[in-house]
Image (cartoon, rainbow, N blue to C red; front, side):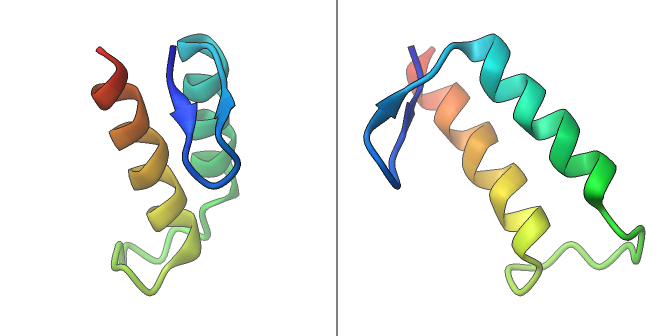
Length: 54
C-alpha cells in the first residue's frame, strides 16, 4: 500500500490514482511541467509513491 511521505499516511493505490486524476484536472494547461509547478510536482510525487509500493 502506498505511503504518502509528507504525513506517513497509507493510502490505497486507487485513492492515489484518483488524486492524480484530480490534480491533472486542476492543471492550467500551460504545458510547462517543471519542478517549479506545484501541480506537476504533486503528480510526480504521487506517481513515485505508487511505483515505490509495487
